[in-house]
Length: 123
Image (cartoon, rainbow, N blue to C red; front, side, top):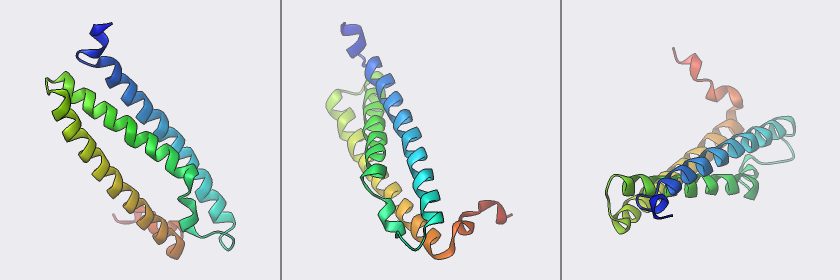
């Protein structure tokens, strides 16, 4: 049993698995809500898309990646307190910036439609 927790290989794989599965759920939920908004633009604001249905998988991604990063730092020899001290703030700040960027992109979609995100047109 101690071989799973020192270094924490189990937590490393668990965090990666949780982050990936939550990411897949986040992608599916975001696509579904975006298509629903596209068909019914007048009934919903784009800001309503960021509901608990979208926040829950995003929190799963954040927690999974925080566990993965913490365990990864411990695998490379960092003490647990330092690993938590680096991983938790880094993951929290990164997730906050990503959430704010998602909100900005959703507002751009609301004003200009989905064509404003066409990155292939910037050749």
